Length: 575
Image (cartoon, rainbow, N blue to C red):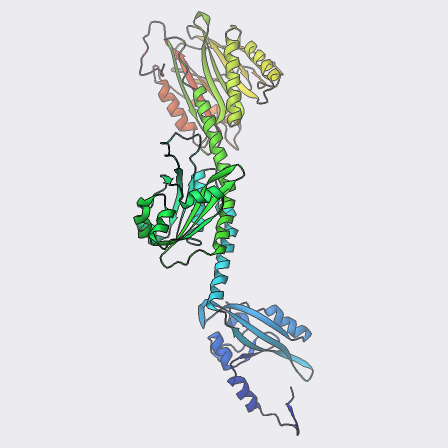
């Protein structure tokens, strides 16, 4: 360094004058060595950092100020190329540990006798306005809401869960209270009709900050049906498919925004003063609304708040539409399957039958499992257990198709393998693209033997009260129905009177990571004493094998009573 030059020539350098200048300035001044360790800190920088000067010396910037983005990469660049740089940094210091601060600094390289000895910096704090800080923090909150929406909304195919995820996201970040209200599903049980001109929605989700939770009873709770009068904010929002923003400073404004005048007291108790109603819509039409409310000391909604609310509602609408479609299809399929799986009527007073159907223990579509019992001539009867591949309405409809064809073919008094052959050909010609497994068993009138044939289905189990259970491994298993391959065979199976014939679908035994033969082999452990309840047997089977099932389960148990034995209503299934 060299002394300043004056008009009369060079002035002698006085270090004390330089120290007085540096220590007296309001700008923070610091000198770092080539390792970016502090060599000197003036009083202003000491105050800015909130750390005594002595605690700076010999330590790097990141060691002294771990909460500050000091841009050490830029400082190293100054050392490397000697070009001065202006650097803006921000962070938290001991002088204000909870408030983010911003600094602007000018840095240049120090050289002595041609040797680089360090970096000198002059730093000024940038004072942003309170309004600017609030806007910056609000922008950060909004960005965070949008960033987390994809991960937090639509985690399931349940509409109410999706609605709850939406209100959980926006409270308290965007509102003090939030609701999602949806149109009742068209497959739900009917509700009382709404009066003319009234819009009825179901409140699917509600969330409020803790300070408002004690006042929610009069506001309306989750699960209620809310009637909105003509001219209410919700009706106006859905009529134009645009957000409605209201500052509710008078009773007249509150009543206009409410479902009806009776809610005025509840709205006043909440202290609500600003509301935004946002439509939740998809291309096919409106699904409902997202309602946001601010109360007490919270600021009114801004235009940016409304933009963010609409963006979140739009994202949630896609997930809600998926959930609505799933619920619609699931309900139809379930009702169809229930109607088709009505309890079979015993073909003869001396035949006992018990059945169960258990959906998989998770939110999946119902499957195509079915069972049937069909009376034949000469006291015989046909038992069937089948499983259409796939899930949903299509599988349930295909199951109905299979069952109808089977009943028609059973009237021809054919042996089981011939029924399967004709059923296979008919399904192939019909164009039905759902294959199915099926097990048929024709039981003679005294119940001492049966003819069985399988189209890709698992073998039945015979439960003898004295000898225990055995799996009918001797039968031949043909290909599933719908392939057109044929090749089915009938096997005669004999058993003692009182033996239970147990049929099931693969959901009962199939487990991930386990060989199916080992799974079926566990059915040999089934027991039932003479005269034991078939209903209780199936309860025990499902309790033991049902947990952990990944597919639907259908089971059927039957037996023939000895001739002359009167039926016991407590033992038999419903007629």
